[in-house]
Image (cartoon, rainbow, N blue to C red):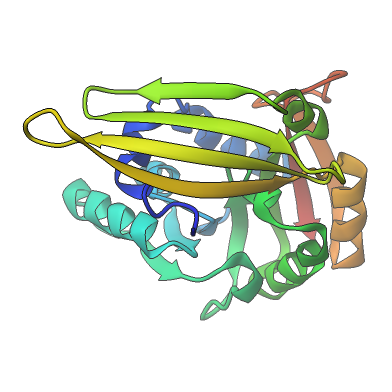
Length: 248
């Protein structure tokens, strides 16, 4: 079953702890470090658009792209409520099929969106980004490290609110190249009964070295790797890393 189908209406409620403001502030720090001042930014794999809106409120013109129509519907509804003078533009596109009407000054991909790409798709996505990030612009993204994903093998987790209960199980593939999440959602109905939904997510293990190599092969340079939301190199056994690369 497609990812983010059953989950989409409840994604924001189940991820209230995500520090989107910290993500936006970190991106702005990297813009300054690389000496750029982008006016138009692409939020790749934007999901329900919370980060897209956070950056829009900071004065950036935004394009959000995601393959899930359900997630984008939530993003559009959120945008309508925000009342921004220049609202984001949302496009239903997979990362591999990215096709913008022009170039952007920077692109970001947050919350392990790149982990959803199998190794054979990385080059395709980086090549699409090379076409649509203007020369000198930045691509910034984060990934769950292989150590993080390997540590989840065999684990079971639960998240719940008053209206939804979510339980997910993680299993590393025999090849140890991907982690599969089986996710069950139980949504409360009037009267106390529940509707059940199921979907599967797959995240691929990408090392910093392999990501850096692929970026260089597809037109990016000045590549730097950072610890999670910190202007510092990753530590040993870092759980999430950020990578910034300049479009050459």
